[in-house]
Image (cartoon, rainbow, N blue to C red; front, top):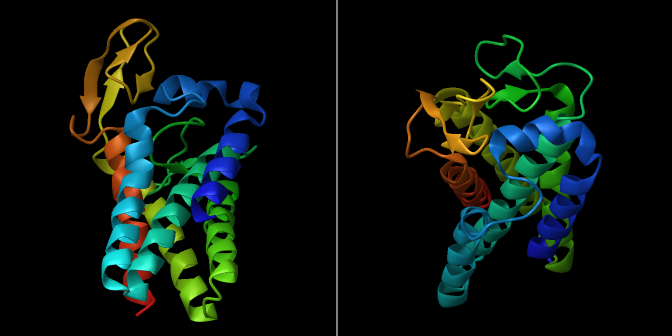
Length: 211
C-alpha cells in the first residue's frame, strides 16, 4: 500500500494540469512516463529496506521502507503541485527568484504539498500496520526531509546543462535533439542520483527517529 499510494498519487499528479507544467517537463526531460532508472532511483532504497526487514524482523527497517516512499511521494507532490504556484519559486539557499521548474527552487505551495504527500504515505502505511503515532510521525518527517535534500542538491551540485538550441538551462545532457553544454554541478549527480539521495534520506531519517 505504501508503494501503491506513491505510484497512484504521483502518476495522477503528473497528468493533472499537464499543460501548465510543460516547461518543467521540458527542463527535466522526464515527462509523465517512468523509465527503468527512475523506478530504481525511487524504489531501490525501499526494496533494500523491506528485504532487510524480512531478514531481521527489525521494525526500524519497515519504517525506513515506508520513509523512502514517503520521500519519493513528497518530492513528486512538491514538484507537481509547486509548479502550479502563482508565486514564482525562490532558490532554496539564496532566495533569489527562479522560473517554475528550475532546479533548487521552492514555493510555499510546493513545500506544503510535499509535507502532505509524505504524511499521506505515512498515515496509510501506519494505519494498515497499526503503527504508533511516533512511528507515523517519524516516517512523515523523514519523507519531508528527503524532499528538502532533493531541493538542496538541485540548488547546489545537481548537473546542469545549457541547450545550444533554445538556450534553456536543463537537467539532461541532450535537449532539442542535440547535446547540451555543461553549465554547472557534478555530471554524476543527475536527476536520478538526486532522487536516490532523496529516498535514502527519507529512509535513514525514519529509521533513526523511529527508534
